[in-house]
Picture 1 (tube, helix red, strand yellow):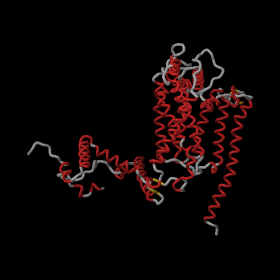
Picture 2 (picture 1 turned 90 degrees about the horizontal axis):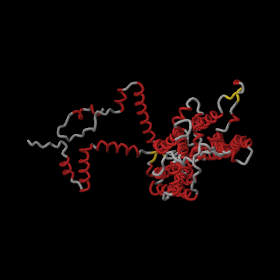
Picture 3 (picture 1 turned 90 degrees about the vertical axis):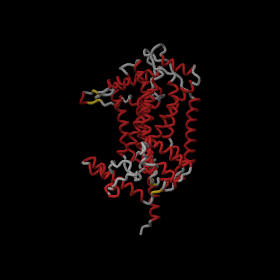
Picture 4 (picture 1 turned 120 degrees about the vertical axis):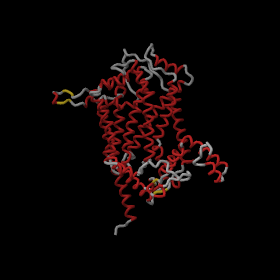
Length: 264
Length: 254
C-alpha cells in the first residue's frame, strides 16, 4: 500500500478515457487545476444561473409590438438626454480630477491661495485654461441635460406605474447635481463665489428648527471662513462623487431592469 | 424531495457518483415550511411571483430578444458611439469658444451690487424674493407667521415636494401629452414658472418695472398652461375621433 494519496476523483484517467482534442485537454487541465485550489465550479454554477437569468425571454417592447421602429427615430434625441448627462458627468469627472492636481482650497494669503491656484491654472499651466473651461462647460451641459431629461420624462408620462421610485431617485439626483454645481461655484473664491456662499449660509440659517445645525454642518460656521471652503471642497471632490456615481449606477440599473418607457 | 428518494441514499465509495454541490441548501418549499409569519409570507410570495413569471413567459406574444430586437452590434453600438463623440465634441467646442473668466478675488468688506448663483439655481434664488406673497395674518395682529427668508426657503421644499409626488397623483396608462391635457398643462405651467421665477431672481438686471415683472411671474405660467390645456383638449377630440373611427371600421356596429 503506497503512502501516495489516492485520487478519489481520478480526473486524469477520466480525461484519457474521453479522447480529447488538445484545446479541450488544456482547458480541462486548467479548469481542474484552478478548481482544486479555488473551488471555481461553485462560482461557475452561479455564473451559469446568471446567464440563464439574463437570457430570459422578454416581452415585446411597444415599438416591436406595433412596428413603430420607423416612427420612433425622431424621438431619439429626446431619449438620449440621459446618456448625454452621464457623458457630461464623465467628462467633468476626468477634467475635475486633472484640475484637482493643481487646486488647493485655502483662504490664506492675499489674494487667497485658492484664487491664486485658479489664476495659476488659467495663466501658467499648459492647457490649464482649456481644462478649466472644459470642466465648467461639462458641468453646465450636465445640469442642462438633466433638466431637459426630466422634462422629457414628464411629458412622455414615463414616471408612471412601475417607475415611480426611479422618478424619486431622479429628483434626488437632480438636486445633488445642483449641489455639485453650487459647491464647485464656490471653489474659485472670487467675489461671486464668496457672496453666493454668503447667501447659502443665510438660506441654511433660515431653515426652521435645524437651521444653525445645517449651517454648521455644511458651511462650518455662521460666516464664511477657511472651514467653509474646505467643506465645499471635500463635498465637491470626495462626498458627492461617491454618492452621485452610486446613485447614477442605480438609476441606470433600474432603467435597464424596467426597460425604457416609450410613449404609447 | 429528491434527496429522500432511495437511489440517492446509498453512499458510493468509488467517487463516481454525482454529489450535489451543497445538499444542505434548502429548497424554497423547505424554507417556506420552516418559517412562520412574515418570512413565510415572503417565501410564499416568491413562489407565486416565479409562477407568474413562468406563465407570462409561456404566453404567445413573448419573443426571443435576439431574433427581433434592434441589433446591438453594429447598429446600436455605432449609433451610441457616434452620439457620444458628437456630444463630447460639443462640450469641447463650447469650452474652446466660450471659456469662463474669473472675477475679482473675494473681499468680505465690499458687497457687490449683483450677487448671483449659477443660472440653474436662479429659480431657487427667485423663490427667496416672494416677500409680497408672505401672508400677514390678522390673528397675529398683522404680523407675518415666519420671516420672509424662511418663507422663501420653505417654498423650495414645496416645489421639489410637488414634483416628487407627481407619479402618485397622476396615475393611469395615458402617456402622450394629447391623452392627458391637464397634466401637460401642469408641466407647461412648471416650465414657464421656472423661467419667470428665474427672471424675477435677476430683477435688478431686467429692463422693466419690478412690480410688472412680479405680476408677470405668476400670470404667464397660468396663461401658457391654459393655452396648452385648450390646444391639447381640442387635439384630443380629433385624436379620439380617429381612434374611434378606426375601431368602428374594424368592428362596424351591427
